[in-house]
Image 1: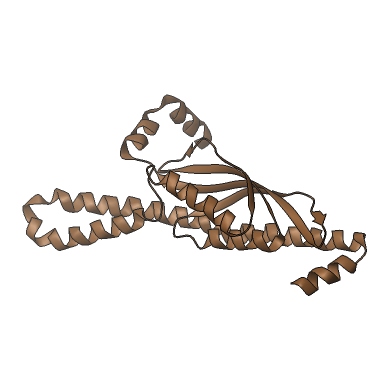
Image 2: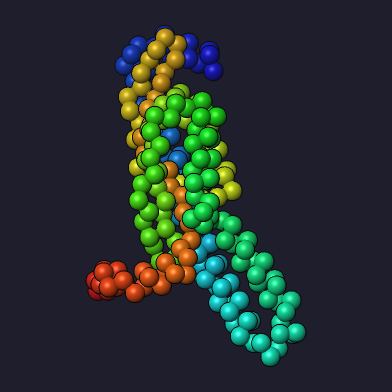
Length: 210
């Protein structure tokens, strides 16, 4: 790594800027395909799984007269539902999850200049939980952080990533990254019911269908 940085330092400034520009482009493309795309597929899969398992669970519970016959099936469905729900945190777990993301950034060597939770965006069965972030560090440190985020047990994605012009301080090059880190949580049954009864949301949905 040091040898690479030494070679870069000896290149003309114009060539170094071209190299950095290509590096930024590759990083943004890699982040999109490695984090955002898979994360949305995971959310869709988890939501479908939750709906399917909840429906099956309710059907099994309705067969009270055949409880003995379906008892083992009910227990298995409950276990499957709990496993599906683990993929997205509930509202009580969100603060801890956000603290974990912040800690990952610092452990990766990044300077966290801003870590500000933003208002949630409610969907049909889940809500986006975005956090505005501004971090600074080397290209290597940034790559380590996003790799660790991608390996978290919870579904976490990044959005609206922007890389500012690098700042050279001696042999080091510092990059500033601005964007959003987004996690997700399932809505409670009360929240889903409230959203479905909200006249504004109904009107918006109807207008979208038309």
